[in-house]
Length: 191
Image 1 (cartoon, one colour):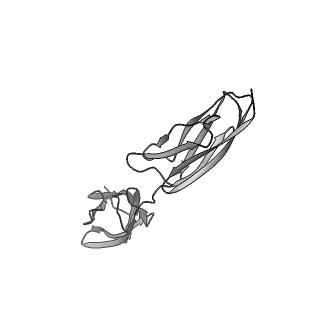
Image 2 (image 1 turned 30 degrees about the vertical axis):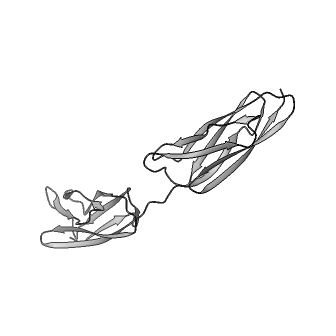
Image 3 (image 1 turned 45 degrees about the vertical axis):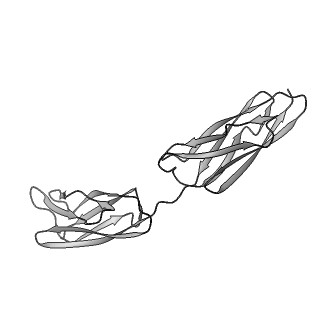
């Protein structure tokens, strides 16, 4: 038994890392069974991993749980009385905030619609992320009160509905989530 390692390291809680065990020489006929262990509740690994015949290493998956503060956990691998270990650092997952708000197209004739899109800085948390929407001029353009970015997703589209008018006009569409507000301008031309 030569070593055990984890990559990526550190890793955000709730995501996975890949573990690798390495032998000092090629595994014998039938392969070599390596025992794995971790006493930490924030990390789980399979009980064993097999290094195939003639190979010197094998990989396995490391599952982690969400944490509220950085946690350093020990991963151990043993074979034939020799034990090796490594430290895996699990960090709190990045909290999602609103990154961008875009409109396409940014100019429409009254009565037509535009497609808005909100994008987060990180995947939406459990239960999704409710982004609040508003229009500065509802007589020209209206939006839903909010739109939900699904759990694990980073973006969501919505429809901006406009009203026919005899004059050109505009509206500022705003989106807010995670303490961040983004705006985008929409021009509404007469039809």
